Length: 263
Image (cartoon, rainbow, N blue to C red):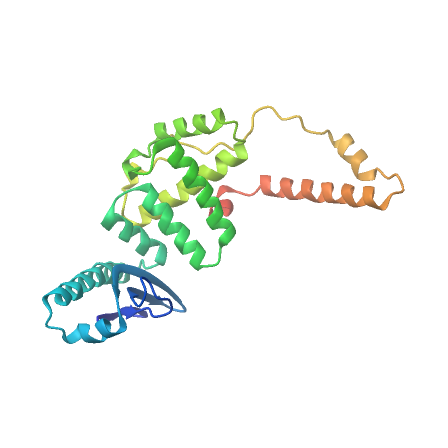
C-alpha cells in the first residue's frame, strides 16, 4: 500500500496474517528492512482480510480515515529513515530512539526500544540486564523519566539509592552502564545535546570499586592452587575456583570501552 526505499533501506506497510487478533482480525504493521535485518512497527490498526483487500480503493469514510492514519504512521517512520540515511547515520537503535522522541522524550521509552532491539538480535542475556536496570530505575524515579532529568546529581542520588538497598557495586555499575548506553544512543540520535550528557570527567563517573576488600595474599593463593587431599572432587572445585579467579582478574583490567561495547 505504502512503500519507499532509501539506498539499501526499504520501508513498507504490510498486513501481518501470521496470528489473528480479536478473532478474525490481523495487525497492520510497518516493516523496515536494512541489509539482512528487519524490524516491524505497529500502527495500532487491526483489520479482517476482506477489509485489508478493500482498503486501497475504499470509499467508506471510516476506512478512508483508517487508511490515512496508517499512512501517517508510515510517514513518521519513513521520514526518520530518510533523514538518518541522508546523514549516513542509520541503525535500528537510532531509528528506535528517534521514534521514541516522536512519542515522548523519556528514558523509559528508550529502554523499551533498546530491549526490543536486543531481543530481535537474539541478545537475550543483555536484554535481561536492561530489564533489571529499568525496573530498578523506575522504582527510584517512576515510569516517566525525561532525558533532561538524568543529570550528574540524579545519577549520584540513584547510586546512593542502590547502595541503601544493599546492592553491590557490581550491580550498581551494571545498571548505570545501561543508563549510559541509552544516553549514548540518545546523543547519537540527537535526542539530547552534548551539554545534557551527564557522564565523563568532571561529571558523573561510574564507580568501579567496592570499598574495603579482603583480598588473599599471593602466598595464600599459591597455597590454594597447590592444595591437594587426594580427592578428585576437591581438585575439581580447586580448579574451578582458580579459573573464576583468573576470569575476574582479566575482567578487572578491561577498559570501559570494551565493557560498554557489550552493552
